[in-house]
Each structure stands twice: as C-alpha cells, then as structure tokens.
Length: 175
Image (cartoon, rainbow, N blue to C red):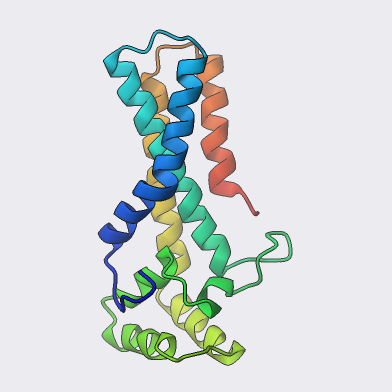
C-alpha cells in the first residue's frame, strides 16, 4: 500500500482483515479452544467472526488515533499523515467524491517529505470532508457486528455483557 497512490476502502478492509483481523481472530479461537468449550461448527464460525471483527475495530480505531491523536494517546496529532501511512482516514480522503479535495490530498502526499504545514493542510481537508465522522461510522458498524455476534453466543446475559464491554472499550480507547 505504501507505493500505491489510491487504495479502495474495500481493499484496505481486506488488508486489515488479513493482518490485524486474522491475528485477533486466531487469538480468540485459541482462547475458545483453551476454554474447553464445546466448539461445534456454528459456534466456531461465530467465535471466528467475533475475533475478526474485534481485529477490524481495533485497527480502525488505531487509524483514527494515528491522525487525531492527543497527549493521552501517545500519538502526535497527524502522525500517520506525516508518515504518509495509508490508513482509513487517508484512504477516505483520497477516495472522496470531492475531486478537488481528493486531488489536494494526493498532491500533498506525493511530496517526498511532509512538513507540519502539509500535515495541517491534509487535516483541514479531512475536517471539511468529515473524515473523522465517516471513520467513526465505519468503526461503529464493526461494533454493531460484534454485538450481533455476541447476542448469538449460547451463554448467559452476564457473560455476553463482558464481551460487549470489549467492543465498547475498543471503540472508545484513547491509546
């Protein structure tokens, strides 16, 4: 992705599902196996999907923090822009239907090195395009997926609440 100029949102989501999504999915499946719960095929698929969605939510939130970081996050504001990382917010800006804004972002990112003014200009364009809100809507979609999956788990409501707290934590995390 580092060398490609424009990446679709779908391609990005596929990439993170094969990286962070697969990593968390594997961890969750191993945890389920270690718990010695009876994992029939249906439950295995639910656990797998839960893990993958947790990974996607984690990565999307990480991308948000990489652009709109604060002292709390430990990531400076605009860090991923300065690194020209093809994170979700940048991909959304590059693929915006506002061609003028999209071309401005592309032109800035095509520079060999970015200075703080470049970073600020990209952030201003992202603000105009409501990229933060759009990224948060996408992360909310994955949180909703997670809640739907959890609701299908064959367990007591108290335990389901614990799993829902994980997605709530991830969508609100600041570091």
